[in-house]
Amino acid sequence: MDEARFLALALTNPVNIAIIDELANLALPDAWVVSGCLVQSVWNALTGRAIDHGIADYDVFYFDPDTSWEAEDAVIRNLHTRLGHIDVKIETRNQARVHLWYPGKHGLPYPPLTCSTDGIDRFLTQNTQVGVRRTGDGYAVYAPHGFDDIAGLFARPNPGPNFSATNYSVKAARWKALWPELTVIAAE
Image 1 (tube, rainbow, N blue to C red):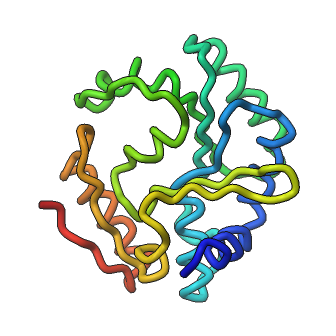
Image 2 (spheres, rainbow, N blue to C red):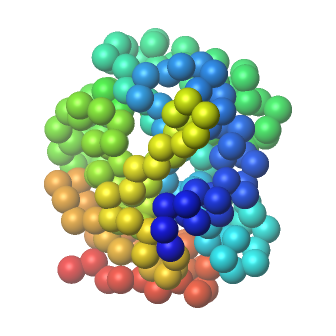
């Protein structure tokens, strides 16, 4: 699968388009729709399921040097107000402040990031290391491991400083139950 095919399938989900378009309208710094909502939309298109099957939430990353909770909360509330009519769960996170709360929540180190794609690079699985955003009249796609695992329905761990084999197992088991065609690569 190439980038154009990935993008075409991910955008068959109108929720992905609505969020991407709203992020462009808001002009949030370094804003991307990321991860599972993109990958799972593609899996659903490839397996003939409803386009929103199994999608628990839609993840939005942006990078604002204002690391206050109040600033992030204002963005979360604004996006919720603008997209509340869609009736889906949207998880919006300022990647500039993840290092402030991640260790307390997950018990793992999380060095500060310098941009949103740094956050994508740290995802638990390689197959979900993707992001899409508007650029002028088109789209930019970030996918450091390409699209083969997405097209082939593979879940592959992304070893790194914040990898958790337990969290990976839980996530992979949930996915396998929803997409039985999925091949889960064991964490080493």
